[in-house]
Image (cartoon, rainbow, N blue to C red; front, side):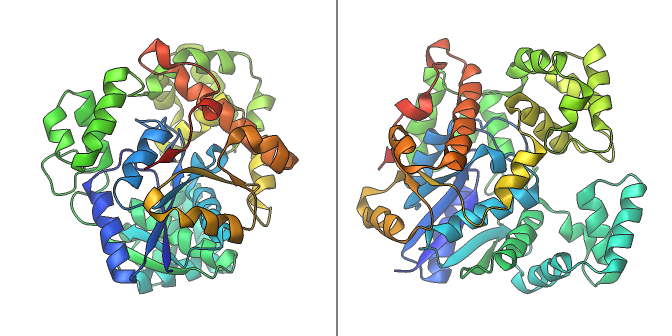
Length: 408
């Protein structure tokens, strides 16, 4: 059976995601879809609007046959780390044939050309990159400008969100010598940051905003009908929305107990940024104010959000480097699967290159020290996430161990 893999966040799952799954299956003639999805925190360093089980159920109801979790150590990281870890998960399944990803252009050839240049950096490229960084550009902008200078690639194209990740997926395929082949689907409808809820395939950010601003009818019009009950249940019970601003107390406690040396160990804190962070704490308390104080032309809002999350979870640079150098993932965690294609779980168990987790209570029996360490961080992340549930009844700890995987 032919299986495609998709790397995503589904924050939340909407009509554009449904279209991509259907189009990818049609164009690849695939029988099954394996999704690698961020857990309770996403790549921008924010908590997911709905928890990972709710989002997994939405995916399974709309074409995904299995959902695997991208651990928070990688899910809330920069694009390169996010992509490499997710690609490695799909490769470690041993059952995925095609890696499918969205892109603004839909032009795989041009993306492969750019990815090749990025994977084999010349001295000229490195020199241009350094010069652009010295001018105060953010890393993505500096890299795109350097590539434009040494090639015929338009830097504006390279700065688009889906293209940035697409390039990292292609680099990761080469880095790990994957057997998976790449395929890209052109993004349809509104662009990544478009706030409109009346556009074809509104963006996830527009849908989240609609839910928050009580534009419920318009927001629900942008998601598959079978998601209505799933999302409305989470909103009515008070498990969602989980919002970044509600972590101000926890973050301030962490920051007020850390030294500059402590901060220097945190992932993505570089070039003296720890001093800027500590200065922010002197005058700012709310998370939005902290971000505004710390961010700059060089350090984007997204990067700062990720760093603040790394601080909350005590994610250190050395820890990320250690796990990224491993040849395989410590484990693959199944968040859910479809009963209609239940054989996919057996195929995964038979072909995977690392342990499979379906019941976390059995983890001590099947995981090594690295796996238990990574799983402990996931438990911490979920405990942090649930602290901000709107309804206090749903702030219980250890939900990774009490909520079963989704079976549809």
